[in-house]
Length: 271
Ligand SMILES: NC(=O)c1ccc[n+]([C@@H]2O[C@H](COP(=O)([O-])OP(=O)(O)OC[C@H]3O[C@@H](n4cnc5c(N)ncnc54)[C@H](OP(=O)(O)O)[C@@H]3O)[C@@H](O)[C@H]2O)c1
Image 1 (tube, rainbow, N blue to C red):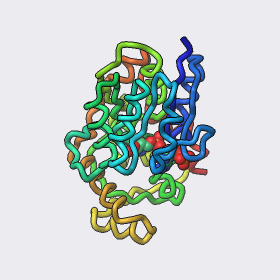
Image 2: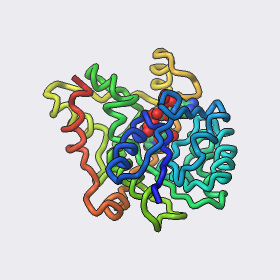
Image 3: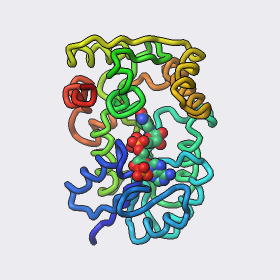
Image 4: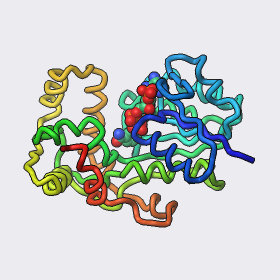
C-alpha cells in the first residue's frame, strides 16, 4: 500500500528536510504549513482534517498554543494516523510554562491510543545558521546567557533522517528517542569553530539573564518568548541538555553528524 505521510511545518528547519528524506524512500508526502500546497494552520481548525484525512502517518511539530494540541490529536484519532512528534530534550525537567506547546503536545500524544513516537532533540546546530543565533554570528558578536556547560548540538539533517525512518518503518511505537550530536562542546568552542572556518573573529559575550532580557526587549522580541528563551538557557546552564546519546547512530547505522561537518556545510549562512 502506498504510504501517504503528512509533514507539518514542511517549510521549516526540520520539516523541509523530513520532506526531502521521505522523498528518497518513495513514500507519498503531503507537505503542509500555512504557506504550503496543503494548507495547515494551528489557528484554523478547519484546515486540520483535510490535511490528516487519508494519511497513514504524520510528522508533527508542536503548536505554540498549548490549547491546540489535544484537539489536534483527537482529530488524528478519527483518521487513525500514526504520530511522530518533534519535542525537546529533558522536557520532563523543564517547567510547564517553558515550551508550553511542546509539553501539551507530548501529553496529548502519550495519552492517545494512536501509535506514536517522540523525538526529543537537543538544541539544533542550525540554530547558529538559520535561527536566533545567526545574526550575532554574522555581526561578529553573539550574546547569550550561557556558561561553560557543554551541549551536543544535533544536526537537523540527522533529525530528518530519523523522522523519515520512524515514519516509514515498524517497531518504533511508544518509543521516545533522544537525538543529540556525537560530541559535547561549549558555546565558546562552537563559536571558535565557526570563527576559524569563516576566517574572521566572532566574539561570544555572556550577559546575565536580566541583561539578555534587556537586549531582546530592545530588539523587539515579545516578553513571552524572552521568558521562554531564558527558561531554556537556565535548563542548559543546569546541564539538563549536556549529555549525548547514541540514538542517532543506533537508528541510522552511522555516526551522528559532527559540529565540524555542520559548520563546513553552513558557511554561506554567515557570509
Ligand atoms: N530549535 C531548536 O533547537 C529546537 C530543539 C528541539 C525542539 N525544537 C522544536 O522544534 C519546533 C520547530 O521546528 P522547526 O525548527 O523545524 O520549525 P521552524 O524552522 O521554526 O519553522 C516553523 C514551521 O512551522 C510552520 N508554522 C508556523 N506557524 C504555523 C501555524 N500557526 N500553523 C501551522 N504551521 C505553522 C512554518 O511554516 P509557515 O510559515 O508556512 O506556516 C514552518 O514550516 C518547535 O516546536 C521547537 O520547540 C526546536
